[in-house]
Length: 128
Image 1 (cartoon, rainbow, N blue to C red):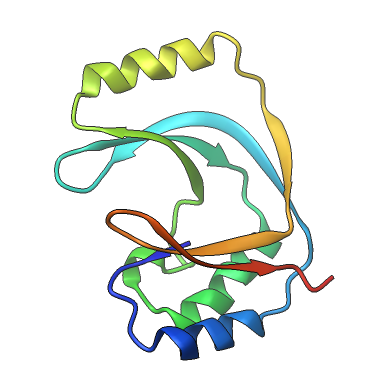
Image 2: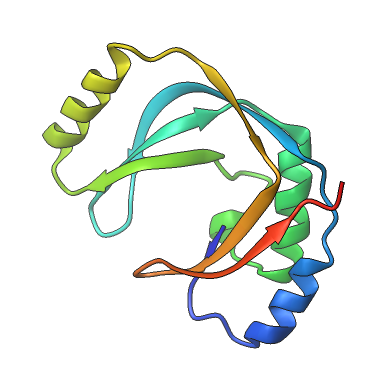
């Protein structure tokens, strides 16, 4: 999770620390490319639809509202690389796809980052 120009940092951290969520099983099923910020390209792992993850995001969205992260139409993903050079992105994608197999990860934390550049603000652990 990331946010820009976090105001009322301590209040937000307190509120986010009250969110209860289970350990999440997240299925990574593909590698895709999407348009990024400032004419860049985002190479990412695609995440299979996951209702528990969507619920967690909805709870976070109530605290840090940003249409960019609206759970109704957010593309869950894990960024691998961001670059302005599309050919480089394609090259990296092709290299990874040579040995790629879908896989599952478990997550029992989420992190709040203040970006650009990324700076860890706080880690939040599962309560279950």
